[in-house]
Length: 269
Ligand code: AMP
Image 1 (cartoon, rainbow, N blue to C red):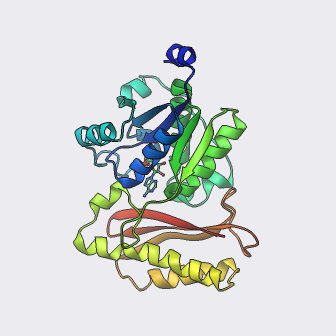
Image 2 (image 1 turned 45 degrees about the horizontal axis):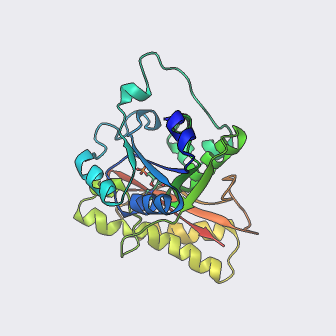
């Protein structure tokens, strides 16, 4: 792969995904295709980023459909490695970004999650050596962690962040939306409504982290099927929780709708 790459002197754009593709994933693919000579997609449901008891086994998968969608988008190379190819027996290396950035929010509720992400992403980056890698704003903390990883380990890869693609009613697209039953799917709109309440307060001049968090919590409380893990207003780069917003802020939340855990965020700026 590397020899082929060196000899043809083309730019590579990499889109790592866990498959079961939707328009959010495809927006990354389109951008990668538009900005690079070669667009590489990766489908790998990475076991090490799931915590014990999470949905690794039942995570939705449909390789045939994903392949057709990626072909239709003109993806040049698709990798669908097996778990054994990525983690051969005895594999024991980890790549970890330490500190608040990985311990807070998702890190608090999914211990070890980001270690799994940074280990597998490091491996993708080494194998593919892309010029650019494409990630979604939907997973804002993941973006912050990967940017820090790339900076601190000198990967020399440009991280391109693409906007969150939403359903018409505001629900952020996610492979896990497939888990939602009809009434849960309706209830799930409460996430974006809560984030919109924070946006509205921010537009009206609200800058206190506490008030912005309360605005979101109050909306979530109107939906009996919603059980929040966290509601946060934090620095978008460090993920430090903010008492007062003086620049940009990341309003984010993780909420169970029935048994399904959903995350979403907006940037206040
Ligand atoms: P996943 O397959 O869920 O691991 O997601 C693969 C990539 O697609 C990640 O960079 C996600 O942030 C991104 N992604 C997932 N959902 C969306 C969405 N609704 N809009 C934009 N990007 C997304």
